[in-house]
Image (cartoon, rainbow, N blue to C red; front, side, top):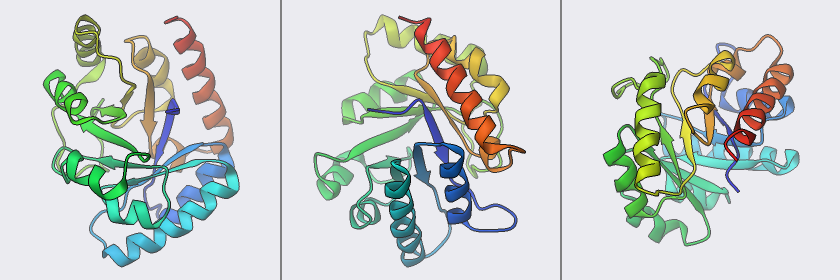
Length: 214
């Protein structure tokens, strides 16, 4: 089961990725993606092992970004691959058939590519400008999402598609009305004044608007 709310880790000003992940878990997030860039693999493995234990403690799912070997060693629930990361087929050979694999997309053509590659869900974005991504793809916005989802439905593609990239709590209702499955957020939880209330309100919006699709 793919959760509708994905939390993507980032290092806060006073703390580490683990600090941020623990805070998100305490706030009620149930799907945690460990996304660590420009650090040694051994350090990322230690983060992943620690994050995996935290996720077990809170009954959440851990997804590791970019590193299939680390995802496997940490016993992660899933792996997420960007368009420039390792090919899905090669990663699948490393992590096995049971691990969830998500893939990033920016266009309808990317979605078709990802489906052909056999991913389990797609992160589609960016919605707006975000500082967490160094090489930012063209921004989609609501119109971009609506157009792509329209083409997805016409092509009868059945896969959870998650909006990603600079999303705030107040964006969720409108984003979900385009037909997307869920959203991925980072700073909206990391820097929330009341993270628990923010996560609760995000889930309420996600669940309310997803029911309207049925």
